[in-house]
Image 1 (spheres, rainbow, N blue to C red):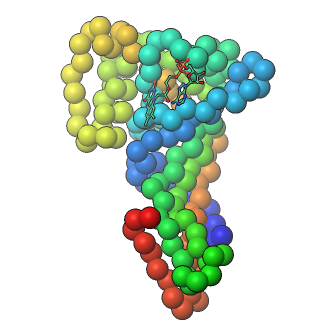
Image 2 (cartoon, rainbow, N blue to C red):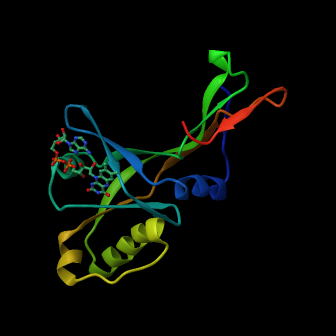
Length: 167
Ligand SMILES: Cc1cc2nc3c(=O)[nH]c(=O)nc-3n(C[C@H](O)[C@H](O)[C@H](O)COP(=O)(O)OP(=O)(O)OC[C@H]3O[C@@H](n4cnc5c(N)ncnc54)[C@H](O)[C@@H]3O)c2cc1C
C-alpha cells in the first residue's frame, strides 16, 4: 500500500475536520488499553470532547491522563486491476495525536467547548441551560505529538484506476 505522510497544520486540520468521529485510547493503571469512539470538536490545535461526569473512562483518566486520539476519514475502496486482489486498497487519510486530557471546569469555557463540538457537526452555535453545562464533563487535549498520513494513493503509472464511492 502506498502511504504518504501529510505535513502542514492546514492539511492536518482539513483531515480532522472531515471526520465524524475519533477513537480515543487510554490505558488504566495496569496498562490495559481502553479505546472509545467519541464525538469531538477541534479549534486552534486543541481537541475538545465531552462526556458524563462519571464513568470508566473518567476513572482511568484521573489516574493517567495520557491519551492517543485517532481520526480517519471515510475510506473508499480503490483498485488498479479488478482481477488482482493485491491491487485493492482503502483510500483514506488519518491523523494520530498524543497528549494529556485536561478537564475544563470554568462555566464559560465549557460553553465555548460545547459550541466548538457542535460546530463540527452542525456548523452553528447553540445556547445551553446552566444545569446542562454543569452536568457535562469537558475534556481538552492539546496534542504534543501529531502525525498524519494518506493511504491508498494510486500509482502514477496505473493504467487502470477505479474509485468506487460505495462498497
Ligand atoms: C458514534 C459514537 C459517538 C460517541 N460519542 C461520545 C461522546 O462524544 N462522548 C461520550 O461520553 N461518549 C460518546 N460515545 C459513547 C462512548 O463510546 C462510551 O460508551 C461512553 O463515553 C461511556 O464510556 P465509559 O468509559 O464511561 O463507559 P462505562 O459506562 O464505564 O462502561 C462500562 C463498560 O461498558 C463497555 N463500553 C463502554 N463504552 C462502550 C462502547 N462505546 N462500545 C462498547 N462497549 C462499551 C466497556 O466494556 C466498559 O468497561 C459515543 C459512542 C458512539 C458509538
